[in-house]
Amino acid sequence: MRTLVVGANGFAGTYLRHELEDNGYEVFGVDVVSDNDNVRIVDMLDPEKAYDLIDELKPDIIFNLAGQAAPSISWEKVLLTMHLNIDISVNILEAVRKCCPKCRVMLIGSANQYDGSKAKDGVISEETPLNCTSPYDVSKNAQEDLVFLMAKKYDLNVIMTRSFNHIGPGQKTGFVVSDYCKRIADLERGKIDTFTFGNLDSWRDFSDARDVVRAYRLLAEKGEKNGIYNVGSGKSIYIRDLIGKLMEASPAAMAKVTLPPRLDDNELVHIRADITKLREATGFEPEHDVFETVKEVLEDFRRGNG
Image (cartoon, rainbow, N blue to C red; front, side, top):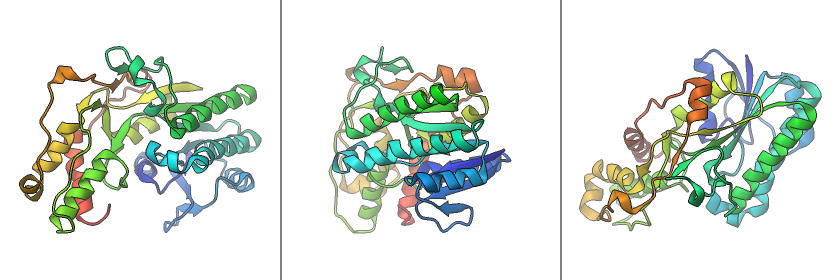
């Protein structure tokens, strides 16, 4: 099977390329920058360039992981967020319908699309109402609507995910785990003397990026045409406990920073993904312990890779 990964040098894209290669796929990648011979530099915001690439490769599967992924940044870069998260997907589908209409296209959405306050007992299924609380959410909801509209009109084979938090070495700052890893690494190097904590009092679904990209591959192989799937662990983790595991791994941080006290488990809603559809379609089960993953992320920042 010939695959094209759009956003191949990004955080999840890098993991996905390895997952596909390890499972016998012929993998091509595209990104806006590259030092990898298997990842081409193509501006997928340009419809003609997107068409030329897809027409040349005629892949069996396309994974679109390109985009602006941080809700906080979306407020600073509204138009860029909309362009990256909508236009690239439209350009891909326009090219697919013209030159390889049997190609399966997977587009990545986000758990941020959901209205968490409408989750029953904190469990978010694909039927949970959507919400728009940032330009990022708006862009992902619009992406999804356009994708399915085009798929219906042109009889295209698409899958959308709504992916929950995923972490791993290589993740940039701007996300809770990577931000605290950088602070701890900076403290250990003497760049800062201490740091303060933001609000850690929430329960969220976290996965190792390697599990997430395995779910993407399995969905590409076995998912239902034009289906929507949650991708997550199906478990809820207290963010304070996750950051606490990082603190325990750093004597310097334990000596200089005081972790906020732990709240009672019943004081907060335990938000988590319902991954029943994913399990039933693919047999997926998480394999990695995120409490070990966060220590790998910290080591990555200690090596200066963050």
